[in-house]
Amino acid sequence: MSKELICLSPIDGTVYATREASSLEAAREKIAIMRHAQIKWANRPLDERITLVLSGVGILGSMQEEMVPELAWMMGRPIRYCGEFGGVNERATYMAEIAKSALANVQAGDDETFKRFIKRDPHGVVFVIAPWNYPYLTAINTIAPALIAGNSVVLKHATQTLLAGERMAKAFHQAGIPSDVFMNIFLDHDTSTSLIKERNFDFINFTGSVEAGRAIEIAAAGSFVGVSTELGGKDPAYIMDDANIDVAVDGLMDGAMFNSGQCCCGIERIYIHQSYYDAFVDKSITWVNQLKLGNPLDPDTTMGPMAHARFAATVRNQINDAIVKGATAHIDRFAADDDNAYLTPQILTGVNHDMKVMREESFGPVVGIMPVKDDEEAIRLMNDSDYGLTASLWTKNKDRAEKIGERLETGTVFMNRADYLDPALCWTGCKNTGRGGSLSLIGYHNLTRPKSFHLKKA
Image (cartoon, rainbow, N blue to C red; front, side, top):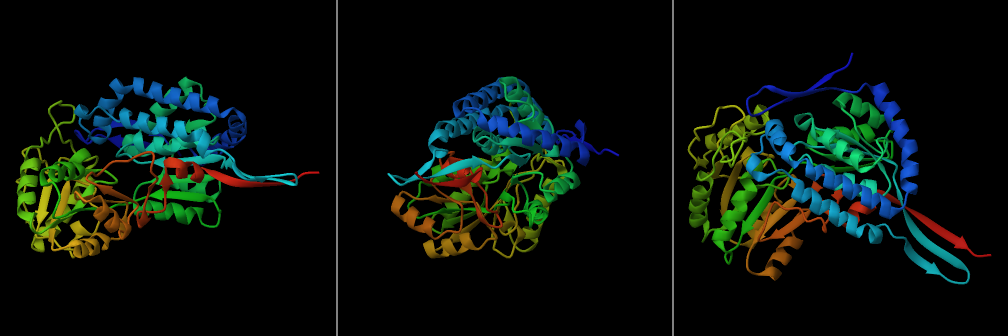
C-alpha cells in the first residue's frame, strides 16, 4: 500500500499539496536506469554538461513568479523576499566557472619513462536529501556540481517543500538534461533507508537534523558509500570592544530573525563585551520590535509563520525553560502570535549555558545575549557547544579576528557579517554539525573520487 506525502501550509494549517510516495520496488527500478544513464552523461563533454546545468538554472529562475508565493504557502517565507533565485544562480554560476580547473587532472610527472596523473571520476548515482528551510539554495549546492562532474542525481525533497524538487526536475529536463540523469523521487523515510542500506547510491548528501543524519550514517554503515552531512547548528557571535555596534545590531538581528530564524547558520547565541552590553541589548530590542509578524502573502509582512507548529512549539519550550531558570524576555507578545506556527520573535538576557536556549538548536526567531569580559571568556563560551557550523566575529581588527577564529571549533569564521554562504569557500562543519563539504574546489573533490594513473612507457 502506497503512502501519501502531505504538505500542511503554515499559513492556515490546511493541506497545500500531496504526492504519492514511490514504492521501494519502483524506486529501485528508476535508480537502476539512472545508473546506466550516468555512464553516457559522464562521457558527454564537460562544456556541454556545464551549459545544460546553467540553462536549467536559468529556466528555474524564470519560474520565480510562481515559486515565491508557493514557498510562502509551503514554508511561510514572506513574498517580499522574492525567493531564492539570486543565491541559486550565484552558487551554480561559480561552480560552473571553476569546474574545469577543479576537475582537471593532477599532474604528477611525465618524462621518458613514466606518465603519472590523478583523474577525478564521478561517483555514479548521487542521492541528495534536501531540507525545507531553503529548498532551492541547499539543493543546488550539490545538484549543480554533481551533474557538472558527471554524476546522475536522485533528489528527495522534504515533505514540507514537496513541490520544490518537482520544479527543479521540470527546469533541468526542459533545459535538456535527461530525465534519467536527474530525477526527483517522492520517498518516505523507510523507503529511503532501505535504498541506502541496499547500496543503491554511490554518494549521499544530507542536510537536516542531527537525528536524521545519524540514522542515515547508520543505514549506510558497512556499505563504504560516502555520506556528507550538514546537520544542526547553534551559531555564536562575539562583539568585541572595538566593534561598530550599530552595524553589529543590524547584521546580527537579521542573522537571528530572517526566515523566522530557520537558517542553518542563523545566529542563536550572542556574546558581547560588557562595555557595550546595555547599548547593544537596547538597540536590538528596538530592531526586533520593528518586525511585522503576519501572513507571508502580505507584502508588508517581514516575518512569516514558522514552517510547522511543532517547530514553533520547540522554540516556545526553550523560551519558557529559560524564563523559569531566570532569564528575561524583552519582546512583548505580537498581535499575530497564535500559539501555533505564528511565533513572536524573542530576545533573552540573563541567560547561561544551563538553559536549553543556549545549548540546543532553536532553529527559530530567538536569541540569547550574554556579556563577556574578554576574548578568552568569549572563546570558551563559543566553543562550549555540541555544534560547529559558523561563528561571527565583530571587530575593526582583522588580525585579532583571525587569531580568535583559529581557536574556534567551527566550519566557517565570519568577520563583521553572518548568515551567508560564499560559494568560493567550502561549506562545512564539525562536531554534531556533521562532516559535509559542499561548494568550492573541495565540493567537487567530495563529489568525485580520485583515480591514479601510473603509465610506464614502452
